[in-house]
Image (cartoon, rainbow, N blue to C red; front, side, top):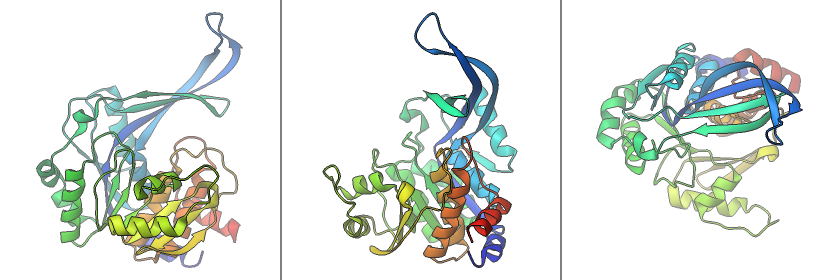
Length: 325
């Protein structure tokens, strides 16, 4: 990838605001050598536990890991999980704007046995506990929006991002001339319009476009891109296709499909967050969409070669791209 050092230098000067569903990713690492006498399930001998920021927090971690400054806004509970989440963000010099609420911190616990995920335990609270009014959002975020270079709306369908909040944040960002991106979760189908970038996966793009396909039907890329632009008027659309790479579209027209950069897939946890973070950073640094997608594709390629929710550094990205060349 030509121009990578120059692009990384521009990225290091950026300041990004992430708004979305924060959560704590907890990992329990151990081994299983016997079956429980109480039920036909493995007994896990725990070796250690680790924690990191998940959800919108993982987007923020990836932004910071690639060298930019980052502030993340979302709900952090006043509980032990909230303390660990705040610590995980603070250790990477990520500023946190805590939204009001009375719930426990969202936490996903993954039990890892011999480097494989055995199961996942989710602790969540009702979505109503996370809702923030448009006026509250403006009071909390207006100064940071004016100071940043781009705003990322990271939706994990937990309830923080509402139509009203997205509309107000987008309005404030557009007024300030800032780049706005959204990673949508169609099962909550937010109303949005005129954003700079959305990054659904293949299934999500079909849902957003209102298209139902019979099994084994080819993906109707041109129809999906045209319809999404018609409905949402988004400038750029990047559809992540898993092992097939990324489909790039601008103003409803297909630009190209970029094959996946991954050499070895170890764990896809958080790869979408990495791709989103890298795309936004490159586009905010004034790269064109194709260059930004190659940058994001390589970043995701590094992350899926790691176990668990992970991030990528500039040094890792340079080494990865040099190996690909």
